[in-house]
Amino acid sequence: MINRRSIITSAARGAVSALAIMAGGTITVHAANKELKIGFVGVTSGAAAAWGTSNVRSMQTRAAWINETGGVKIGDETYDIKIVTFDDQKDPKRAIAGMEKMAQEGIHYVVGPNVDDGAAAVRPVAESKGIIYFPYAFPKELYTPPASNAVLGMIANYQSAPAIYKYLMENRGVKKVAFVAANESDPLSQRDGGVAAAKALGLEVVAATDVYQNDTRDFTPVLTPIVLQKPDLLVLSGVAPGNAPLLIRAARELGYEGLISTETAQDAKVLEEGAGELANGFLSVGGASTPEIASDTMKEFVDRYTKMFGEYNDESNTKVYALEYIIETLKANPAAIDNVEEFKKTIDTFSAPNPYLKDDAKLTYVGMTSFGQKRQLSVPMVVTEYRDGKFETLFVAQVD
Image (tube, rainbow, N blue to C red):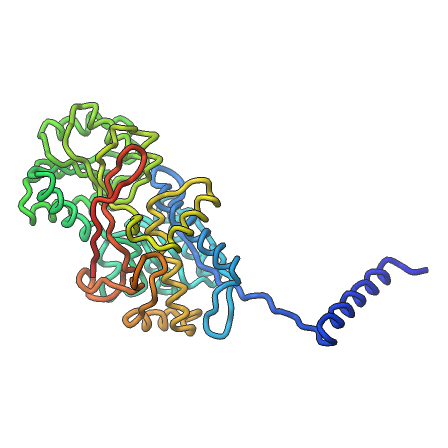
């Protein structure tokens, strides 16, 4: 009797023989690509979820695109990219746990965290476990010597604030400015940086100490004394995307008619749903691209992202860059795959074509002026104005 195992074995031999015949007697076996894990530790839930969600979706979109087209060649090996994510819920203790998880999985390159407390909290783990991480947080001590494992993934508020205020002084007649911030270290730090920038430009600061708890939902009591000062500009320092529309709505309903701005990235859909036309004219730092400078690759990225997730966040024009920088730097020095010290050596002289911008734009590391060393991704500073459900470009600048 012929049993089932014999049939399967015979079938397998037959298949191999057929392959051999088709290949002219030679059996060719293609090895699968190796896997390169890149981590994300950041916030994807709560009021600030849009920041981390934009990171994760950008990474997943780009990784799927790379894998679909055969992977990426680094040195003599070809890799598929796997994104490993961890929601720290904007909690420093969870951020530490997330970074430790990355270390346990042998991951050397991590995008995030998204806020100051989290980025500072994970520093000891990153430095002791050999991890380069790319925070979207602004404390200078993360990027200045002796620190060397963190690379700022975006434009900092102390870089964008002077440019925004100067533009508004020259083009919108702003003379008086007021600040309000959540009572947390991240927004308070951004507020202090904004106040310093405003004073340096000669603006009159009429409110600089007003704060609110991050879970506030009725902002009328907070904003009433500020609106009475009649500032030309109200700055929502470090405002989370979920709180921005509530603050805007409260200010407008109190009769405030001046400009409102922030140096943090926002979500147009959240603004539209939470504040509607009351958010028209709201200024923020947008994604690092505009239709005028976006390449065909950037347009395809937006299309793939939208198809993958059913919507698009303008901030992803910035968040797409971190994974690209990691991969291109590893391509420039394959020894950095398992050795972050090799990655650091490559940063100072690294340059590669920027696939997301037109013309001859380059990927380079910057930060010498702000940090005394190159620990920042070079991405365009795009300042946007919200209008009827979408962001419109106000101006574009660069940092060194």
